[in-house]
Image 1: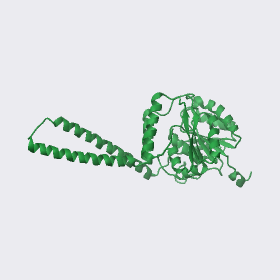
Image 2: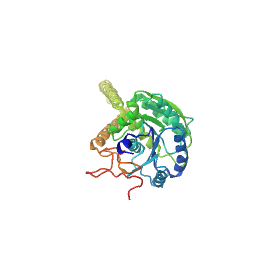
Image 3: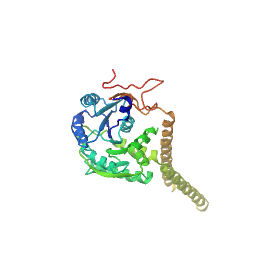
Image 4: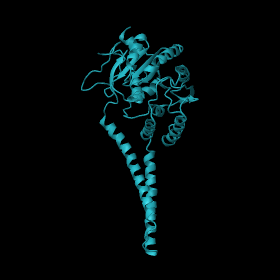
Length: 346
């Protein structure tokens, strides 16, 4: 195959799967994923992104690449950068006209991929998913619904189930995301802002095959806080509104105390009430400082312009497939990106 012929050859479907310490479930994922994709009857590639796993995940991915080099590519990151950064690394390397994301824990069955591909073929450019009969704990389901409602009211981004990673994107949306340079972002929400014709479909949901969830309660709260502050300034507007109300209330209280001082005289009965009001206002001020610090921190991270992640090695990449990106690869001070065909650099 000539260089130009190879360059123009693109798979119809790319599946991007972030992997972090998933050795216990990878074999089951391989056994279900490839038959599900083969059944579609379309050309495809599977992009596994190892996000700095400390177990045998990287070795198992390399072995799977050797077993299916025609449809498998593996991106090995130089450290642990988080799920969304791993997905962005996969987007950079993807070539398909339809790009899907999938978790490695098998909670979203690979057999549901065909349902999303069919919707994309109908002309939609973004297909989200809604987990049917979620197999998560009660508190997680309740917390997820509460976060969804809060996020929709603040950002106007309408996603029924923001925690479901099984989603499909058009090539145009992926290319647009790749041009974005945000340090912290929530990929489904970012894609939604670029979509012209989005839709959601219901998909099956299963219990996690092996291992434990990588998201703690703090991580989930942190993720939603990033989502809100990354896509809306409504919290700042609310804070300004609260500040105005408290200022007016404080002025009114001050006038009332002055009048009582001249009418009734000195008194100490309301001291504890004043303490309570003071502590409440201090709490509001501290919260305001934290919220302002969150926005300022995002600005600080952005202006440093550091790479969001470092790609150590790409198994299965050819020179013509490599996406040039000076800000998102391992390049530093003119060093070429380390990409190999077939085997990891030693």
